[in-house]
Amino acid sequence: RASPWRIGGVGAPLFLEAGERRIALWASTTAVAGAWRLSGDLEGELRSKREGTRIVARLGDEHVRGRVFADGGTLLVHTGERTYALRLAEPPSMSAHVAASGQANGRVESPMPGRVVRVAVTPGQEVEPHQLLVVLEAMKMEHRIEASLAAHVRAVLVREGEIVAGGAPLVELR
Image 1 (cartoon, rainbow, N blue to C red):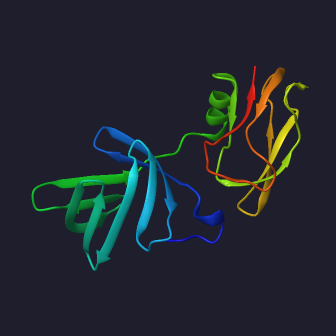
Image 2: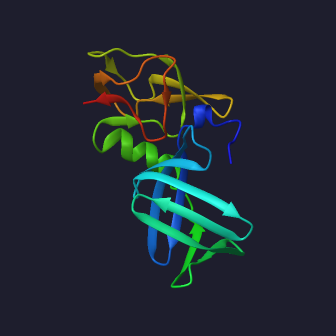
């Protein structure tokens, strides 16, 4: 369903567990009702239609028909040939995401979908730990994206007013 705080239908994070497999996705709405653009562990356009407890879904060449039942926090999808058990997985912590994106490869990524309201640095600039890089508006709040270490701004990858998905690169540091 559409959520009023999702800006322009941009990337809703979705983490699923199917048995031992963990599936990380970003699902963005499209102009077509019942269609989602998926990126992450699965790529492509997902089209689905619910008819009571029945579901018809297609992702690329895969076409699934079945019945969906909720069992606590698990969704059971029975296709006749197979039963899929899906449950929402716990998302990674914000601090883990920021640490991984800010230090591992020098790329600072958006922790969530939102709109860039301010870019506070320019390429070539030196920054100190906790210095403001970007202000992101998401969920009706402004979020400060700061440098996690002293670095040189190699590139600014967004502009003010731009809508970004969660995980989108904002700034490159070295």
